[in-house]
Length: 357
Ligand code: AMP
Image 1 (cartoon, rainbow, N blue to C red):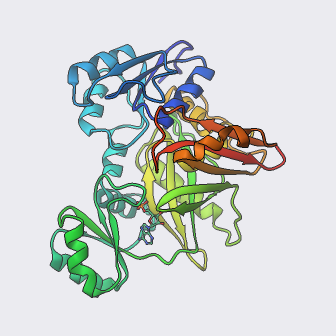
Image 2: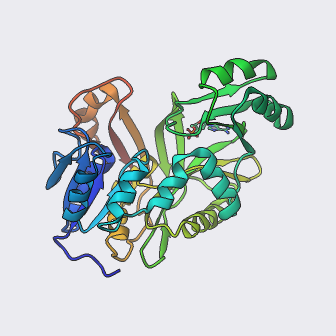
């Protein structure tokens, strides 16, 4: 594909904060933007050039949207595959259907990573019956983590099965079907790699980002993270294998567990810009949102070497009310998503604290 000309339109499925930051990056590069979301007045649509408000299942709306845009992308992975399939008949959608299908379902994702991308993953099994779960706990031991295969995020749709006695209650609590069991990973640290692959197959990776979760939700990301166990090159090699196996185009977030001794396990992949990559906005390199737009529009990928270390902290619920105080501090940059209602647990913004920047 040839590089999109300035003034071309980038269409984005989803109008949340990731969509908003993609719009900002696209505008900086001289593109027009169009948001498709079932709801009006979203964080992204307020700054986009155009918007379509319709359900993702509305094929006519999807067709009109696709025809109005030069390339399409999405900001979250729970968009129905049918919408991507339909839109792809009229224009290019990146990342493509395969990436979305793979990450939609934890069982498909883990099987793909292990069998097609030579990636280390936890022991896992599909769970359809209580007997399946009992057998899994017998074979791999407790604790195990039982998860719904689809629509789980931020720790929702998962429980820890601490002993064989918990099997019955755990199975019942998650609804009993379309589940996956995983061994519990005694990790010493969680980290992620944000990477991009261009249409020409070129790959760039940002350095390791160390992630700390609070209440099952990402709280802080620190980059570049310490690499005491010398895992960086292995993590980057795994990342390359995953992106190439999917023939991926765009930015991807890959979440890892690091074990004592330096063994790595991939927990999950997100076929989109990722919360743990927000630090790139103030690190003095190409940020992940611009990198994604560059990748999907056929531009050369930008520089991913940070000039500064950054600590990113999410602002959840009424923490956003501290924005003015925080942004008055030196080397501190607040990104407010301009969401209309403050709700407990809702991601409202984030703050990047830059070391020496
Ligand atoms: P997930 O929804 O799979 O991203 O899981 C959310 C969080 O739960 C992860 O970031 C980990 O902190 C924890 N977690 C998930 N799976 C496992 C596992 N197999 N072993 C240990 N902790 C896990």
